Length: 230
Ligand SMILES: NC(=O)C1=CN([C@@H]2O[C@H](COP(=O)(O)OP(=O)(O)OC[C@H]3O[C@@H](n4cnc5c(N)ncnc54)[C@H](OP(=O)(O)O)[C@@H]3O)[C@@H](O)[C@H]2O)C=CC1
Ligand SMILES: O=C(O)C1=N[C@H](C(=O)O)C[C@H](O)C1
Image (cartoon, rainbow, N blue to C red; front, side, top):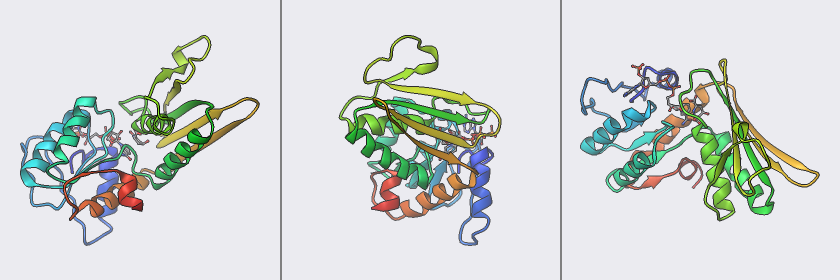
């Protein structure tokens, strides 16, 4: 695993420690691109760590589960390129609840052309904003409406609402594990879909599930939903 010393990495190691069939080895930052024998590589680090994970997965022909957020377009392209050689799964959220929320949000967005605003809150240490999950939910809504994603930063954008844009608002502070609310705002009525992560081990559970289910699959690009429900 790359990012083993981080908050999520530690939660994954702790959970894996309860299962005698699993052993987690940390990729050291000084170890170059070699990893002790493994069945799958998990990356929960920072965008700068991705290149090393790509090298390791490519050289050792390992399935790659990437949970790191804040990746740039070129990094996503590089992950997609790797998927022609090994199985690759990039999940910006390993929660089963968020996976279900994304489906529900797509369905509401298809049925109702209402304004959409997404509000997310995370702990004070989080580096990227908006969260990967908020962006993924926004993409799902845009896709359901057959539009390109177009965000606006509600907090810093006074004046009338830009029609069709999806507002993103970000809160940072305390120890919030992860909170996402999607507001669908119509005439005289509104819907709020909300997910609250209560403990980081829920992401660890999802990451280990994804890792287990990726082993033995053919090289391809996989979504978290796909390995969960198809
Ligand atoms: N998909 C999901 O469900 C979830 C995804 N995440 C994402 O996972 C990532 C990690 O989150 P979190 O654990 O909170 O973050 P932390 O800051 O706690 O951990 C970051 C990890 O990355 C390592 N790291 C830092 N710089 C580099 C580098 N240049 N190369 C390689 N490794 C590096 C750190 O090592 P060191 O200790 O040596 O600095 C540490 O192990 C984030 O992108 C976050 O958004 C988080 C929760 C859920
Ligand atoms: O950094 C975090 O903590 C989290 N990051 C992910 C994101 O950016 O969406 C998932 C989760 O919300 C926690």
